[in-house]
Image 1: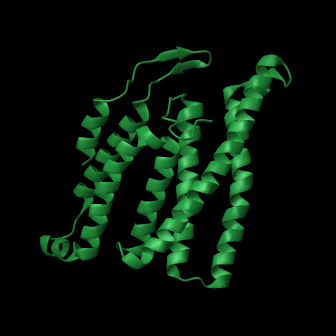
Image 2: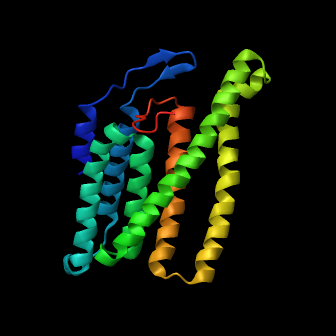
Length: 228
């Protein structure tokens, strides 16, 4: 599947450098290409290091594993197709939350769909809030550094990334700590607990990927519905 994803990515986008006022844009294909190579290397490593016997593998790959495999395959295809329509931020947070949640659950069950749907919405809302605030800070520092309203060093790429990461961390950590305590106190059940863990993982993963690729390496990620 990772090889199919790799060839699909190669047939799309561009990896050529596009100059801009901040340096260069490696092109919109770089991030998907990186992900496809990572998926291939990870799957190859798992295949090589898998020491189970054939009988153990057959026993292990039961109905639950088949459902998770089907989910992973469908989500990977949907992710590639949806990214161009709804953008990197939304598609990545939904993919991360969905896979993390159902793998924590150990299977795909109808009774978990309510927790999955609610968790997906909350994850998306939290990510958009953090993303929007970080974007406001980024624009303020970049414009301020150029116009002189803030010291020039505060408008450098390194400082902007650090400030954005600090802001996101200050807002994210209290939500994670207080939310986890609330989930444990209310005894909402394993599905709610897994949904909250998936929320934390998906939001942090998506925001870090965005900061890493978009602001550090200036990769032109697909904006989609999140145009700000």
